[in-house]
Every structure is written in C-alpha cells, then in structure tokens.
Amino acid sequence: MTNSSNLPQVAVKATYMRGGTSKGTFFKLEDLPEPCQTAGEARDNLLLRVIGSPDPYGKQIDGLGNGSSSTSKSVILSKSDVPEHDVNYLFGQVNIGKPMIDWSGNCGNLTAAVGACAINFGYVDADKVPENGICEVRIWQQNISKTIIAHVPITNGQVQETGNFELDGVTFPAAEVKIEFIDPVDGEMFPTGNLVDTFKVPDIGSFEATFINAGIPTIFMKAEDLGFTGTELQPDINSDETILAKLEKIRAYGAIKMGLISDVEEAKTRQHTPKIAWVSTPKDYTASSGKAVKASDIDLVVRAMSMGQLHHAMMGTAAVAIAAAATTQGTLVNQAAGGSEISEVTFGHPSGTLKVGGKSEQVDDGIKGKKWQAKKVSMSRSARRIMVGEVYVPQVF
Image 1 (cartoon, helix red, strand yellow):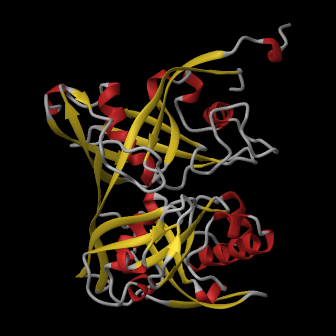
Image 2: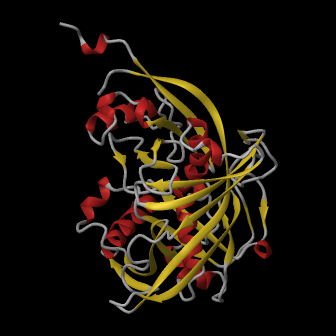
Image 3: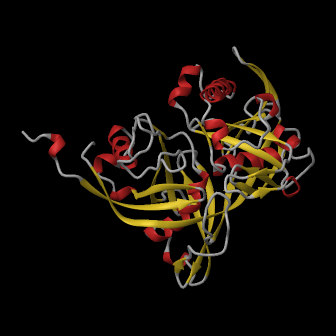
C-alpha cells in the first residue's frame, strides 16, 4: 500500500497576478485536476494548499499567500456560458488560519486582472482584441451573478501591463484598467428599507449605520461613534485585540440586521461578507507610505475591515459600496462627503486616495413602490502578471 504522504506532488498550470491592491492565483477551470473542477471539498483542499492555509503562524510560508487577506485569494476562470459575456469569474477568499474558503462575494481589486487574464487565456474572441486600443471584456461574476466590464489597453496585439497610472497602495505604476460594475446591487440596495438605521449590539451599545448591498454587502458607521477619527492606519487597529473583537461583534449583529445570517455564530464561517467600514469628514493625515493626504483634496475618509483586519488600502468591492452610498443623498457616507447630490467622490484610505463614480436613483418597481438602485459604478485600477507556470501541490484532493 502506498503511503499518501509519499505521493509525488501534482503540477497545476497557474498564473500569479496583481490586480489593484490585491494578489491572487488564477486558474483555468479546465486546467484543474478533474475532482477539483466542481465545487466541494476536493476543490477547497487544493486551493487551500496552493495558498498555504490553514497556517497557525499566519504567514502562509508553505504556499503562495503572503499572510494578508489581500494576498490570500484564488480565482477560477472559464469561457463564459452566459450570453454576451466573455469569461466567467469565480473568486475564493482563502482564510489564513482556518481550513475555510469564503465563496460568498467578489474581489473588486482582482477584477482588474480578470480582463487581462481572460485575453491571455484565450477566452476572449480574437476579433474583439484590437491591434492597438482598448479591448472591452465582459465578465460574468459568478459569486454574485453580476456583469462587470473591464476596459483593457492593448498594444501591438498584446495586453499592455506597463504604464504611468499610479494607484495608491501599489508601489509601481502600471497601465490603467477602467472597471465598470453594472447594476451592482444584490437584491435590495438598502436591505432594511432605510438609508440610515439604528441597531443595538449587546454589551456594546446602539449605533447608526447605513446597510447597503452594492458591490459587496457593507455596514457603514460613523468613525466617532466607534471612538475613531477615520484616519487610522493598520497598526492602530490590527494590534488591538479588544478593538478587533468589538468590530467583529458589531459586524456579526449587522449581518443579522441585513438578513445575511440568522444567528451571530454563523458570522464565524462567513468572514468575507458583510464588510464593516467607518467614515468621517475630510481630515489631513499621513498615509502608510508617508504620503501627506490633505483634507482639501478629498471628500471624506473611509476605513474598512477585511477578514478581521483593517485593510491596507480599500477593497474594490467596498469601493463600489462607497460609490453607491456616497451618490445616494441621506446615507452616512453621503453625509460625511457633505450631504449634497454628487456623481463621483474621492475618499482617503490608509494608503492614499481613490476616486470612484456612480449613479444612484429611485425607481418604481411596480410592486413594493420606490426603491433605490445603482445603475453603474466605475473606478480605475491596474493589473500585472507576476508569474506564469505551474504550482506544485501535494495530493490533498
């Protein structure tokens, strides 16, 4: 009998990419071992081992993850079977310390890499790719069943990855990729029916919050209500276990308020969604890079948690939520930005600033009456291939 621990490793074709302020390992669905081409334990075990999870040391030394929620990510692409779309995009947020992958939401940052990767994988028809210009890649986001359009620059028939576009949170400039999230609302844009709610968290207190389903389910709160200024950097939050526990408890009760879970215990296995973020009026601060961010250059400041840690910049999907909420008069995000009618907003995050645009409006659905709807949210990101080859994985599937 062969000892399974002595079996040779399996080589799986993979592409390692940066998208926005995240990194992830991208796979063609058809390149995965057959047992891993469908949802289930085999697929999860493979991807966990690729990334190096679960790792009680939190470093993911024995995998491609880098010990951060921003780099503990997997993407599976396939030729789209949805009409008028080029590629199906399935995202898995890999837990660092637990044997768990959260498939409940999208990664907006890695979305910037999906268009380029789809072209390089051959999923985009050749006649759609210009010799020079912009290739419009229509992406079907499988986790949330939404359409995303990536505008990928092409030079001499190849995806252009280098350029002069600078994205705060990314050290080096690259080519700009414009992303449009079409009808980004999942169900009711404001699931409680209100732009601002008050909800109670046992043993902590009552809070005002804007609950929104746009890009990714997000709970927006006032920084001052949490005892924050809104200019916090990662060490201010991530080194304080008391603060982290408080934010996680608020997130769990907020998830109940949004109808995402029915019991707070469920939040332990659903860490990717919802997100919790806090907002405040513009303030001067120094970003994590040492860059001075001036209050006069931004409309508001926002900080957001990802997988139990303050994000080093801003998740792309949370930026979608910020855009949708900021362009809806009356939300806490809109109030922090001045309370006026706006179509775009520049917000400060731990690594710098980001501009996002959107259009939100009230429509009559003919059944429940008027409801808020975000038709489109847009932002600019960048992406770059880091490695193309094979990743070696022990036979854990």
